[in-house]
Amino acid sequence: MDRRKFCKTTVAAAIAAATPVITACGEKAKVAAEAEASIRAVSLNGGEIELTKAMIRELGDAMTGPVILSEHPEYEGSRKIWNGMHDKHPALIARCLSSRDVAQAVNFARDHGLLTAIRGGGHSWPGKSMCDDGIVVDLSHMTNVEIDTGNKIGMTAGGALLGNLDDAALAKGLVTTAGVVSHTGVGGYTTGGGFGRLNRKYGLTIDNLVGAEIVTADGQIRYVSAEEEPDLFWAIRGGGGNFGAVTQFDFQLHDFDRNVLSGMIVWPIEQAREVLEFYADWQGSLSREMYTGPAMITHPEAGHVIAMEVVYNGDPTQGEKELAPLRAIGKPIADGVIVQDYKVLQTHEDGAVAHGIRSYAKNAMIGEFTQELVDDMVDAYIADPRAGIFTHTCGGAVADYGATDTAFPHRDTQTMIVFFTGWMDPAEDEVGKQMCRDWHAALEHHSLGYYDNIEQEGDTRVARNFGPNFARLREIKAQYDPGNQFRLNSNIEPA
Image (cartoon, rainbow, N blue to C red; front, side):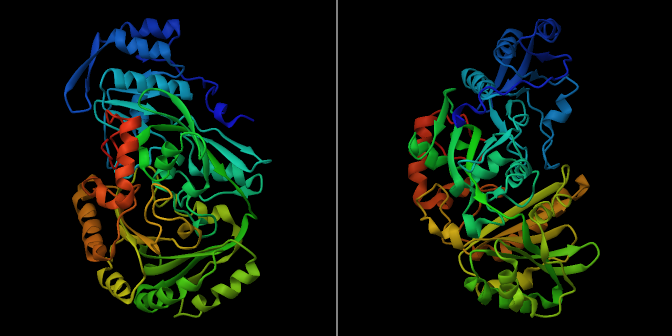
């Protein structure tokens, strides 16, 4: 199977026609003629642009998928993204059904100087997969996943969710590193780096990326790999969405028994210091098969707790032996670590961060789990059901790569701490955000940088965060996106 052609000719789904959707279909074009003569849009630099009916019709004629304008009944649903904090109204949404559709939408955006957002799964925490008054290149209907069992490759369309990838691979007895919330989009998650519960064994998701199809700002559909356009392939492995719209990811898969020793151990928050002090010494000696990460949260039933997430990717008998010292610490109020389907933990957090939640997050890449860090984690704990901190454990295979081997530079960190707040009432927005900022500020001095996919205000620190890779990233940006068309991200300006 030719992986390069997998996503280029996606069969167009049947999409209900209603005014004012614009496509090449004659009846829909007739309806489009009844729409306003022009619509207002915004340029890359914030200026006003008039898009005439003829311009929009031209895009509709070029695409297989529809162009959705504000009066269309699907517009409201199409502009909604995961984080309810962001209520944005694009001028038009180009719903793409193939790589060719993506190329046509990118060409249109570039030719008319439009502010451009790329939407995959729509899970951007800062809301950058949607925009006001610009164009959204919407890949969310491109969700195909195909498994090449002979070569152990998962060919994944740019709009697929992590749950789509997990389901398809696990059904074949295979897996790769995927994130911790199954309704996260593959696209933004991967180009940012890709932390997951298997990264100590298999590396980050980008370490399992063997090739990708990407539409660059010139509208070209390119296949990139270690052999083909290697600079661009290097850049999309950690450089975020700065270099184009990735329409296909080819992941290396690994043999996997989906019944793994996994689950949560929970202690009351009063035992947090004891648990964290033990963890700080213990985690450095763990095998690559063992993934553990502490969280400090307010549980609706258990109250204020410290919890330890556990996944052992290997023989459960050996995993039980390795886990025994942790189980002996303190007096847990719950121990749910058993041999169970990997998907149980992979979907465990889906409900807590369901679509529509209003959420704010910050993060810190931590070089070493020190006593001072433990003290600060305990002292800074916010006893509020809207707030929590979680960790993504590094080390193992993550550290097999050097800081400059991929665009993602933070290979020498032991963990990433995510500061999370979530609520539903818009009246709590400022309180929720400030809680998160305060908690982060109390621990920020331990940080070596941030994880691009989560950080809300990383734009002003992008050079420092990419460190030794920043100059090269700017040069590659200048080659493939000299006009900075793809700027709604932790933006790297072209050299």
